[in-house]
Image (tube, rainbow, N blue to C red; front, side):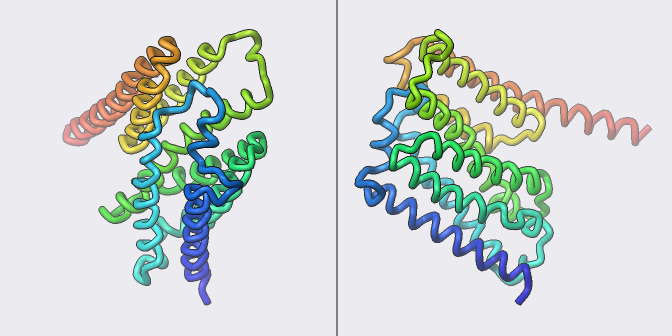
Length: 260
């Protein structure tokens, strides 16, 4: 039995297990409460409107495509899939652990699990971004993990907000709105850096989607948070556009020098 076959098999098992845990969570079978209800228990200003969480449907559809694609016999020895290794499986394990901790209001431990998901996906992203050779790889591998990492970036910042609120942190005297604004800026700078360096429109679109949701939910509560979220959208879009423009300029210069 080859290592590639084992990787394919455990990828399927890990993904199915993740779906099972998410099904239990969304149906209230974990601690008798659904994930959205846990999220709404604390008045966190970083949380977007409820409809934004529908992106999980997109994420799991893309991940299902990835799991099916990697399970096919032909791409078994695909270098791109081999580069992922067991990082996706590790992310699935941390995903399930996070759900348990979050539903039982163990926010500090849930943060540890969330960081585990984030780091695992960063490792996948680094290994696959820019290395797709076919359309299928671009959609079901690179695209899937761009969207997933984009959402987990948002979720990690939100999770940190839950931990700090649950611990009763006073924010060094700063108001909750000020800290929410700082977190929005940090998240946008991270997203802008990835948008510029990686020219990843899928990742950027997820962040913009979340920011719009934050504006719609939090602006009536805190005008400052709503305005800050609104200002961060052009930061991300501008970084993405600048990255593409710089890349085109470099290619153009390279082409002219080569022609000369």
